[in-house]
Length: 318
Length: 289
Image (cartoon, rainbow over the protein chains, first blue to last red):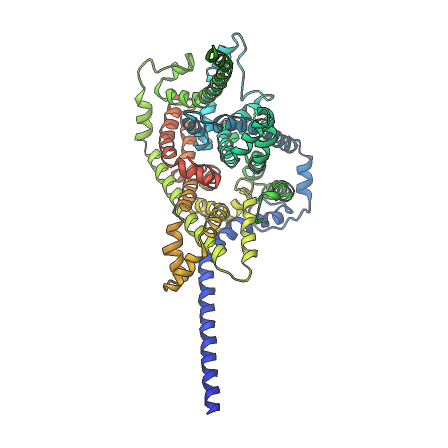
């Protein structure tokens, strides 16, 4: 009798554990089916190539045949000594610096202008000012090629109307001003995006706090610097992050406008990579450029997230 | 007497307010002119002859609207081929991105298993590598897989680079769906997949639409990857197609501007219709219309 009972309980127990096993298997299968396709594409087309480029960068390789010509760090050495590469790095950093010091403050000022207080029609302005962001990069660049046309572009026409008698400016043909022209085009395209982000950030600012400060006798400048901007801190930190990363990724607009020219006057890291790595089929050398780009991106992203944006995450991604 | 004094005290205040308002409108109108000017020139450029452009850069089409520039583009088979390619690329990227991202986001937000955190962190690494930065190794991989000149060679890498961002957005949205809803669905006999398919996805429509809208824009506008991967001009999407017109006609600005106009009109319509979702997608739903 007792033997029978114990037999029965073993049976139910093994039945239960079999059910549990089956449930676990089913769950594992479900997880696999949900995760595998996405992760497979991600690994194949992003992570594995990115990691592989570190290896390619140590070889002299034209992209055909196996990797045999191991050159250690010669590609990096060549890179370091190439004056055009140094110029490209310098230009990328200049674009970044100008974005942070000109583009972002401008977008912030406009957001404060449009987003504060009841301004009739502000929605229309928001809609209009965001339009350039929706255009594709090649379309933006072609519109601006037309506007910056040296003989009969709108830019020179406007300049002539405002300051009669000035010489026509070769916006994209003069080595010394081409980078600023490029920056102007990039600003035209992207300030609306940052404006939208700032307006979103503004909505998170508690109006009562600003009102309280005003009642206590603070003038608008104090309210702005002591209340509004600090409360928008997380948005500002995010836009600086996006802007820096964005500056190092500029390719298409610059490529269509100038192809990095004239005489490397608007060469940036990505156009350099494309010209000297891909077009000339120096894939080993190009990989070294790519690795340098990764390092800049990686060091900045991780450093910035750890040091500056840490306070903005409740649950950190990294 | 009393009232005029109050009025006198109020007048400067009122004026100051009015002045501030005036300045705000002035700045906004100036900016709108700067934004609209180039676009308007381009649109007008397609309506005018090249001679008009060279003599008077910014003017109305005084010799009548030059419709032939538009009909030349719209009648060319290359344009319609490029439109087809753009549709295939955009649809492929959007469908794959949204479906794979929602599957991943579901597991990362709702199903617990060993190694989940690690897997999510690996995927998040992708956020650090925008496609422009990683273009060379990706190009080598596409070539090694024999996908050069195939639209898949554009679609699959774009999906890979778009996935991390979409998963992060959807995951946070899925996590906000109350757990009680999930428990209730299980009590009612729903399977895990059933909960995902019939409860979570319908509830997440706004987030899914926002993610899809951004992917449509990304796919429709992509230029760099097609430039590298698609050597055959018949495979080119619309953004590359402009290059063909530019090369073909050299400095035929009028025709290039007609092409540009034909491309920006649908983009503007899409923008006005989907503005809500674009803004939601970019700001994580913080900015409301």
